Each structure stands twice: as structure tokens, then as C-alpha cells.
Image (cartoon, rainbow, N blue to C red):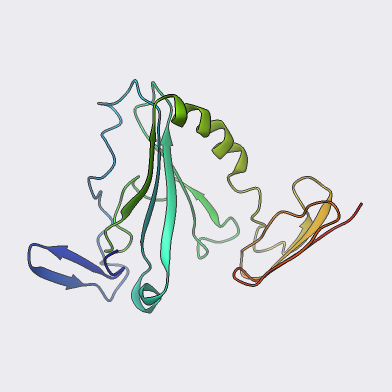
Length: 174
């Protein structure tokens, strides 16, 4: 993957140091939804994170469209957007992430994509607690979630989990 705060044009490499001026336009990787109107599509992208984070992190997101749709739906986690860190259509479907050109990681089309979309919609956001409510019941009501920094994970009955990558503790009970 290319550097998150970098974009390549020909042989020139442009490094962006200010998020306000870094480009966010379409990379051209996603097919034009109006042209492939009869096809369901699910794609997953990732681009290097901005500035110093580019050395060890990427920003992933998922886009999809059902057959018949002329636009994509994009979901991602954006922690600085306030209470709700799971964002819908925050940016263009295949846009540069603050100057970083995304890489297409997954590309499903047709009946496979159509079957995945319902599962994706059911799963999006269920494991993320609002920043203003760091403690609460799990989505199933069978456990408890505690989140630090906006990351979270589902609690299962009778299961204890510590996810140090996202700084999450979840406890389940019978």
C-alpha cells in the first residue's frame, strides 16, 4: 500500500501534511454504480492512515450496492466524528483517504454479493458503543460491554474477552 499521507502522480510523490488540504476524491477503483445497475457489489478497501499513523495502520471501509441501486453505501469507523463512531456515507465510495490511494481488498459481485449485503447490514455497528456511553449491555442483552476509546466487541453468554488491540473488555453471564 502507498503511504497514507502520500499520493503518486506519474513519478512525482506528493506528501500531504495538512488533513484539510489532502485530497479525498474518487480513486476510480469502484465501478460506476449507474453502469453496473443490475449487479450487486460488495467491496472492501483500505488506505494507509494519515501522517505518522501510516507507518503501522490502515483505514479500512466497506461499500456495497444492491442490484438496481445507482449509488453505493459506505460504512467505516471514524473516531473523531463525535458520539457515533460508525459512519455511513462519510466519504465517496472509493475516495482517497486524506491523500492515500486505497487498495481494493475484497470484490464480490452478483448473487454472492447479494447474499452478503443483508449480513453486512445486520453486523454494521452492533459492536460499537457511543463514546458517551462506554458501559452497557451487549447487543444481545446476554452480556456487558466496556469500551475505551470507541472500540468494542460483542459479549457472548459465559464468555470473558479482553481485546487489547481495541482496548475492550467484555463479560458475559448465564
